Length: 551
Image (cartoon, helix red, strand yellow):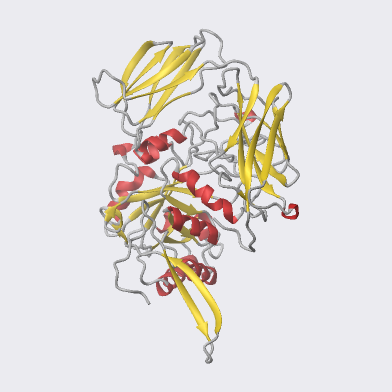
C-alpha cells in the first residue's frame, strides 16, 4: 500500500529513505518469505550547459575516487566501517564517491544512501556485459547512484587492440544498452573514464574527461549537446607534515605544488588557478563536477617515488585517516564553512632559518603574525593560497581571517606554537568510530587515535620514528592492526604496535567473539611507549548477534 502522501525527496542534505516490504504467501495464506529493500525518491538531471541538478537544485559534484582498501583490512573492509569511510570524505566537503575500479560493496552503497553521498558506480572492464548487468540489477534501487560507468582508462580496451578499436567500441555500446534497458527510469547517465571516446560522435550519455583540465572549453565546444564531467582529476601528491621533497627516501612535501605530468594541483584542477583561461571544475558551470584521485591514500602506486614507498601519496587524507595540509584547501572551497589554516608546524627549525608559510582559507583577507608582530596582510585569491617566507623564531605564528577587505577585527584566528619535547601519549576515540560501543560479536571495531604531546598537552608534530606505541587491550578484545599514514613505513598493518608519524598513530580494536561480552561491558585499551606517560581509552560493548554486519 503506497499511499497518497507526498514523499520526501532523497538529497545530499536530507537523505530520506523508505522501506519496501515484499511478503510471499502460499495458497493457504502462510508466509513463505519476507524481503525488505530500502529506496529513495529523487530527480537527477545533467545539463550540457548548466551542469548537474539534484531535485532541480544546481549541485556541483565534489567527488573523490577511492580504491577498496583500508589499513589492517586490505580489501576486506568490514561492512560496519563503510559509513566511516564515507563520513571521512564528507568531513572536508566531498559529496560524491567514484568506486574505482570495481563493483562496490553493497554496504558502501547503503552507507552512501543513508549519509547523502552521490555515487559513480563503476563496472570493472569493458567487454564484461554480464558483469555490468549484475551491477545494475543489484544497485539500481540505491538513490545515491547517479552515474553508471563502463570502464576506466586501459580497462576500456576490450580486445587488446586499443580503446578505440571496433571491438572495444562495440563492447561499450553493448554495456550502454544494458544499462539503459535495465535502468530506464532513474535519470542515470552512462559515462566512462576514457578520453579516447570524447568525440563529436561519442556514444556516452555523459562525457568523462580524464585529467586534461586545459581542454574543458574545447571539449564543450566539440560536443556542445552532451553534459561533461571530470571523471578523474588532480592526482596531486603530498605527505602529511613534510616540508621538502626527498624522493630517494620516498618523501613528498605537503604543499599543494606536486603532481605527476598528467595531473595538476588541487588549486589548478578545481580552481583553474594556473590553467589557460582559468579552466577548472569550479570555474566552468557546464562541468558537472569531478572526482579527485584519490580521497584516501592506498597501498601501491607510490607516484612520484618508488621504493621505499609502499603506498600512494595521492590521497586528500592519508591511509590512517589523518588530514594532510592539502585537505584544508578542500575544506575551504568544497565545504564552504569559514576555513582558516596555516602550515607547516612552527617546531623543529634552527633559529633564523627561512620557513615558507602557506595559508589555505576562504576568508577574503588574511594576516600573518609572528610572535604578535604582523608580517603582512594579503587578499586570499579565489581557489588559491597565500604565502610568506619568514625567519624562524621560537614562539608562535598566528593567522587572522577577515570577513571583508579593510575590516579591523578578525573574524577567526588560528595559531601554531613551538612545542616542547615529547612527555606523554594522549589517547582518544578517532572519528567517533566505536563511540557508541563495539559490537559483542566482533562485527564492528573501535578506532583509537594516539597523539604524542609535550608537557602542556600540545602535539609534537615531528617525524619521531623512534617512538613506538604499543596497544594493549583487555582480555575480551584484540587489536586488529595499526596505521600511521606514513607511505614509507614497512611495519605490519596487523601488529599491535607502530611508530609515530608526525605526532600521530592509530589502531583498530574489536571484541573477541569467544569472550561472551555483554551489553555495557568495557574494552580497555592502554597505549604505551618507552619514556612517555601512558594513557587509557575505554570502549563500551553493545549486544549484537548477526550474520550480517551493520552500519
